Length: 193
Ligand SMILES: Nc1nc2c(c(=O)[nH]1)N(C=O)[C@@H](CNc1ccc(C(=O)N[C@@H](CCC(=O)O)C(=O)O)cc1)CN2
Ligand SMILES: Nc1ncnc2c1ncn2[C@@H]1O[C@H](COP(=O)(O)OP(=O)(O)OP(=O)(O)O)[C@@H](O)[C@H]1O
Image (cartoon, rainbow, N blue to C red; front, side, top):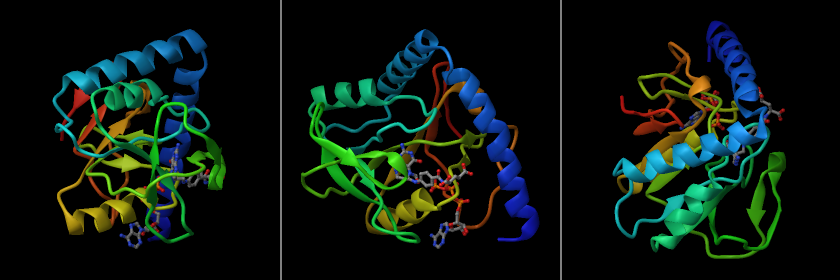
């Protein structure tokens, strides 16, 4: 990655990170946003019957997808969450059930203490910033990009961003390996590229 692009991504992360922090600050509004975004997600026809869905356990100021994951479990989906196997590697996914035993994984995200390893076809993706073209910026590990490239080489796989509306940028800086999201869902709207 060029120095210019690295700097542009770092600047975009700083801007969106501050906006996300503000959106997450008030516990009441935080919960309402998570509920509204979950309702939009479920109403948008993004999920195919019976498919395996990857959610995530929120860290820092990420919007909480737990309610959405519980609703999908209630509709008969198997759910899983990402597990880091090492730097530079794709993510693995371990089965998650509402209330299942968890332990602390790399970078502080909770991971299931036990369970099957699954391959999701739909990923609810955490993010730092997104734009209306559905380009995504994460923390910079490249984990979701590598994972989507791998899973997509095996079978059709979609990733849908889950975020506060405040995390939108005009244009997320991008490089060749960046994977475009199928859609981004916020408390305000469902955005498709
Ligand atoms: N909730 C959640 N779980 C997840 C992810 C995620 O983004 N959110 N991941 C998605 O990949 C993986 C964890 N990856 C991560 C990679 C880096 C950092 C991180 O904080 N890195 C730097 C700071 C980078 C920055 O803010 O500019 C650090 O260690 O301080 C956190 C998570 C798997 N699980
Ligand atoms: N398929 C891939 N193969 C090899 N390297 C990759 C691949 N995808 C991304 N990378 C590299 O990973 C690094 C980080 O990528 P990027 O800044 O896009 O991460 P991110 O999307 O913000 O992070 P994350 O997905 O972990 O939240 C970059 O150097 C990028 O070139």
